[in-house]
Image 1: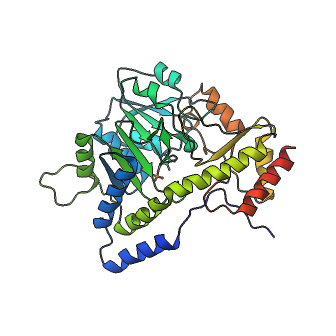
Image 2: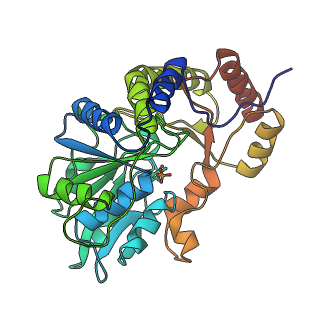
Image 3: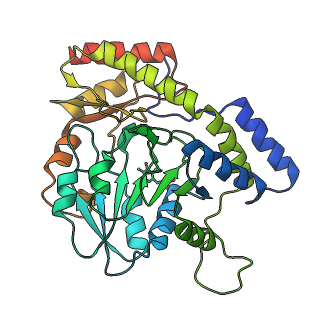
Length: 349
Ligand SMILES: *Cc1c(COP(=O)(O)O)cnc(C)c1O
């Protein structure tokens, strides 16, 4: 009897649990030395000046926009094929989101659409590296508008030999349960810009300040940071594991009538998601996969332009009709992987 294969699943090791227990026994559970160590280790890992741990990816994004002085009257460019966390952060600071379409090939923000939507009020472009494949950053950097890289799917991946998160003015990451690594909930701000970093450290927590201003409680706890430190020690091997699974999928699905994910041209794919495109009957296929106990999903629940009732996003509309995300995570069992391949091959004929 085969059990249901979840679409995504966190990998939590005995060492992660031991690390957390140690902190829980210490009496110091809120933000302290473990958070500091986590930030230092992450800065070394990414080769950046500093990182700042937060309570979530959303709070990291909120702080990032505040640190860049984004406010009422400003516009922020956001791709449509993402989760609503990005939209929320833009509205938190009172700015106007300008939603743009994505590339069909790699799901990332379309540079030509960004160019068409630049205005004098454009303050920031949020650039997610979608599903584990870095966005093409060079042409975006050349536009002269500050970039906030969203590395929630792609932490540890390289663009032109340098890790994502270190290219933009700022970057953020999420450590939600099913991301590349987890602290349950959690986030990170990444930057080389000291002024921006100081502002974010100031706004992240409210106590022991000489001057009052509106601040937040967006801190990570020390037991989460202990888990994060332990998880980070596995990240590179987990990336290799994901790439191995992806390689097996690509090898064994290549003659099916579907489009497989592609990497290349200086961009390293670390397969946060393995997204295939089917030309017909996506809904039927999803039902059949569910019956076969293969947990597949729409890679994006609902594109932002649809929530906002906007028209004219042909690529994202096509992706809504065609894209299916199949299970991929470091703890995916080999027999499950084989079942997924067998099931897809037989359903796709
Ligand atoms: C998960 C995610 C976020 C939000 O992170 P939370 O930790 O859930 O707040 C932002 N951007 C992307 C691309 C994400 O996948």
